[in-house]
Length: 621
Image (tube, rainbow, N blue to C red):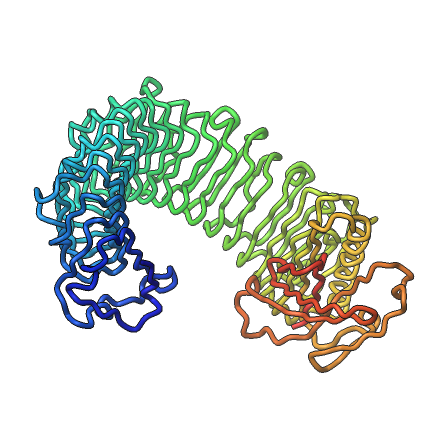
């Protein structure tokens, strides 16, 4: 018997509804996932009965929003699967009523808010799954250590569960987050095959030292727990999460027997850190009240110190020779000197009170200086050699000079000297949006894939260098944004439009050369301030939402490929999230065969349909 109860208004039940169905083996009353939160249990209580009689031959029972308090009167001796998700049940059956449960393999009572306890399962020796997640009233569990087949126990969100569960020694994963469990007991040593233990957001304040005896434990999560001392961890542990705890000191010596690779202490009360174990690769100390750069191992690869009280960073090759990612965003850093030439790839100093450009290594690929107070930037050839991404959104930048170019105020003299620095193929992202003091972007590389300068209200001049066509086969998209740049001169608008057409030509040529590979997609999105479309660039124009084109038999260029771009004028003054822009186009080709194709384009990339190979959009706002 199968029924989607989300599609009915009410379910009329009588106590004897199933009594005549002596051979009924399956009851499957389910709700579609979309309606899972919208099906009130009351709609299944039309006759207000307090129970129904279920046939003993039943082997599979799934009844979402089960409306009764228990399964009293039902003998589950033949039952294999029991699912009563989001039901009104308070208890399954009396503790010792049913012990012949050898067929039972799964019990799922997830989100049964009124369920208070699970009965004795001594006879359910073949039980594999016990899912009780979200049972907010559950206060106790029976001993489960005799259930040797049990491999999944869901107790996440059992916010009144106070006792650490007794499970079989071979149990691999324990998820006990959002519970009231206060300690990890000494008996933890018996779980010899435990791989992961999660007690996130529980009440744990004590962890037994016996946990160090577990040789299989790899992942321990005690985040958001009131624990105040760093736990003794087993050698096998590779990931430890102690974020938002009360721990104040972390001292792990070189002699500490551990394979720990990831340690998260973010949001904790840590003030002092001394870690020398060479196994550590990833350390998160964000939003901790530390004021000095921590003592950390040379082997560290990733370090997060965002939101800390640290004011100065001075790193040499000897101190952190393998560090690749350093996040200091939102900290109090004012001075930075980093001389790790061979390692550092990603540096985030956004929203720091910095006034001078940091001393950065040649190896750096990503640099984020958004929201800083830096006004002038001068980058040498060495520092730009590998730089791929520079972000200075919402900063106070007035002048950015890379030997060839200057981004500056009108009071500052411009520099216009030919140089290959920013023409380097390594630069693929330049993000300068909402830099309200920026007035000049000069000698930009013409084929940079990502250029965002929207919201630069003082920006007046934009120009691009003249280079030979790009020969990088990896570039198949371009994104260029100048929305709300209301001070742009007409020459600058012409330069932006011309650069967009240059990129369109490049993509069209790539598409011609790769037409045999339909999985390749090419796209361009360009948006800039304006109210008039150039007739030189776009010959066919219309003031309505449709346009009729008459194309020569083999195309205007004699090619058998039909390629065209679209330019439109749109009012985007009220659009604050340009990354969510979406435009739609429907086009029809005739004769001899009529083909209707619909395409769409959002600012992050096109949605492809049918056999369309690319999207080219130029937006004027």
